[in-house]
Length: 107
Length: 122
Image 1: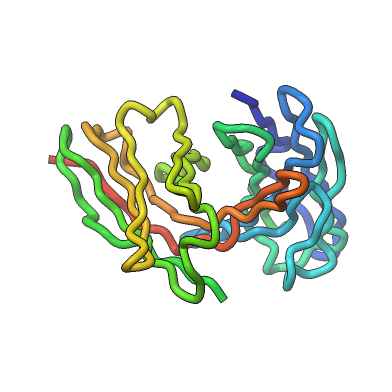
Image 2: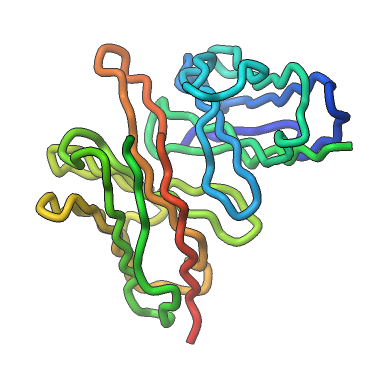
């Protein structure tokens, strides 16, 4: 199985601040990497697919980059509605695996 | 647009079989691949399996001996069965559509259903 490691596991940042979340795969997954946002009591929502493609309707302050084993999700200017947990997911091979999540709190 | 809705019992006894249904609206289940994912309370996401549009399936090896995913095209639904459940199977269960790019194999899950909590307890 491909292990996905996210860091940090949690962070606290101010509105307007730039936030970066990292996801590392245990082997190369090219750009088979997706990012989801999950708010409390809600289903995960697709933000970024194929490492860097912004899902339709998602604000442009969200961006993704990376290839191989390392990928990054960046929120360029954190907004109050971005309070959530973020998960990366590898879709390179089955079993599909997710990172452990990064909880973003608004300072 | 495609919408998914999970349904099924919210309480299952230990050793029994968990059965859930995902009803798809706004699109045909024959046109895509589908997935089940679960999330124990306060924990992360665990992929359960895929149902491909040719009827083939792919399961998480950690659950493979107990899981079955199938489709009812007449009702535009697909279902999950998980046998011999224990308290460790208590989770919110989500269904989702798998979108794939044929030329590259790149794929992702979108959209997701709202999820349904299944508690395993006597």
